[in-house]
Image (cartoon, rainbow, N blue to C red; front, top):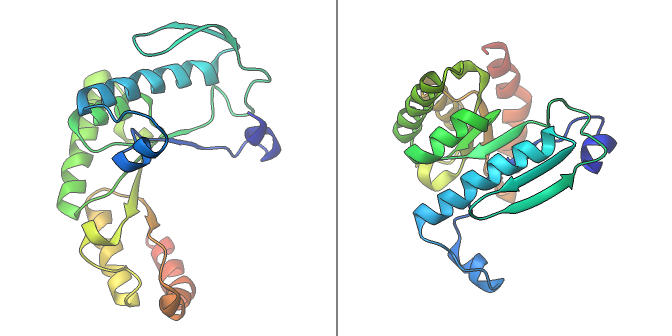
Length: 198
């Protein structure tokens, strides 16, 4: 809440299940199998959603319990700061349909198109307008199969393919130092044109 206040109400909270087993092990945390991992995630998202939107929260879940937990002062953004959820599988996409203000994923454009369609279906199933969720790509070079910083044309091609798959926001993996001149050309020439195109 401090960050939300000092930023003038610009906090955005991003959550995912975690995926890197070694990271868990280094900190002495067990890495559960997928059903438990997703179950913990779903309950955590539900609890965080409640905590951010209420003055006091009591929660008796399978994994988490809180009793009259205060969140004061309240966030500047109401009912709560926006939540970005990383989600790829069917169950995770159903969680995103219910709670996400922004959905983030990575993969091939075909995988993203399929997930985007599943997210739309999950929204419709609960009576939520799919367009309420911003669609955000984590542009990880390996799953995309191309490097957006190799040329302005490559950047345009990648953004075009993923736009067609339903994405509207692009968080690209950082370029290598030797690619900075290409990045500068993209920033100066390509991005303004892409923004005009929507």
